[in-house]
Image (cartoon, rainbow, N blue to C red; front, side, top):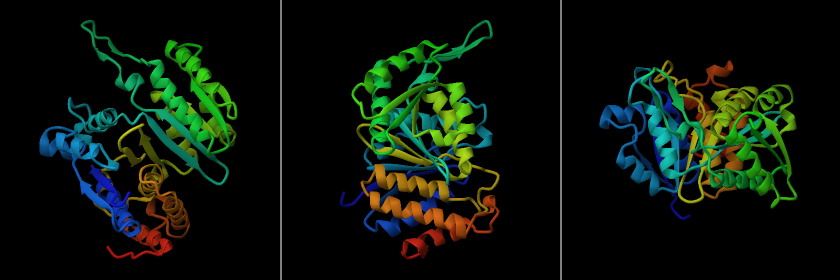
Length: 333
């Protein structure tokens, strides 16, 4: 990949600030990189009326990877058109069905593989004349098979254990999920498989997170469990994610929200975004050696130059300076 092309979607709130940190690091590590900025979320609604403008989607489809800051603004809470619709729409249009959420600390090293484009978030929904509402959870066997294979393949690069999380004692979709995962597991005799109900999985994440290697689960369960795992390993402000498909670009984004209450103050912690850049280097741009170097630099800077949310005094720019210094690159802005 001679000149990797990355579309940057700063989005809302602190998204612009952490994206600026990410672009500084990317340009230092890959001087040949081509970065293009587009609109998504609340800022896109303000400028175009749509949370996912056609120009943004077209640019993303032509990129090697997509880097997203954050979406969401309080003024759109409960509105018919919301910033989050842009993100959900982009995930579906790019078919990035595999959301990777690593959680790592001194004692924990696990990876949650969340199915991202099916289930409740993409099913039929609505309101009825009697005042009731419905959201439909549906899965096709092919959707389950591809996310399961992704999880087993990733487990082969780790400790070769997969925990499939479902609610098979209640939900028909979970019973189908378990059937398909068992079938896929037969192609991976070198990987250990266990099944776990989601309520027990949530409890075990709190009591004994070190027991897990790779967890694979459907969209809603994965959303909740991955946030729980992030809380165990430093909080959402440190958590990164990669959303991958089989073809086309992946989406790489920090897990935290847009934090409009601190936007513009220069104090946002860019660690989650920079960790997302590391995931992009590994899974999107084919540069695993740079990914490892960046991850180590972020870890070291979290220790030596913490931001205000971690009890330190470093600003967004000062933290980024620290990362660049540890990478041995030019820290000029």
